[in-house]
Image (cartoon, rainbow, N blue to C red; front, side, top):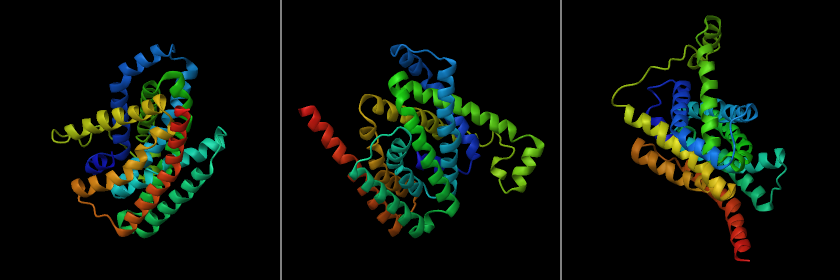
Length: 297
């Protein structure tokens, strides 16, 4: 995802790209979401719509908008590694908001992840600007809130329905913000505050025949398919097992960024990757071993 977004980051406004890719991704998932709702015996009510709108706010409007901004201001590899720390923040928020216990190895993983982030932010300054790291951090926090809030919905409505609903409602919320950005006083205020990226946002800029293939890949494969697969994994296995993708991501994304975007991996970045990967191992391996022992019994 980071590599693909970085490849088109100069062609589209970050808010425009976020809104469009989640709307198209949601439309792609709509038939599967309808089938998922039917299989769970559910239908869209006012309460359900409000729930999906809240998830869309956390994910599309806040997390993914900050995520896209972070890709603009930092290397794709750095954003990927920082974003991969979100499962540990999921553990923290699950403890704070739904009172799930945090075991000793999970607390140790949290400390390792924080240490890895600190190494990257302080040591790999060539990998991005302070603003890029800040946007990545905010994206992680809101995505963790999205994951914790969406956990219950996966069992009620199905992972595909939760993904599709949050995508469509979130993209509509972003569309309203885009419309507001064209109001004269609002636009002037944003520009005077140095936030021109949020003023007079166009939905039509950047589209050329050469960019359409990668744009559709971002919308359908990465956004629609990737997010749906994550929540379906959470639905059919467990949040901890589904989050193993974020153990693979810190290793895979920098390699892809090196091969495709020719981004260098700084020594501090490499150490940060190792520390965060160690945190992922400390967090999830004991959990998976425990689950296997239960199944064997």
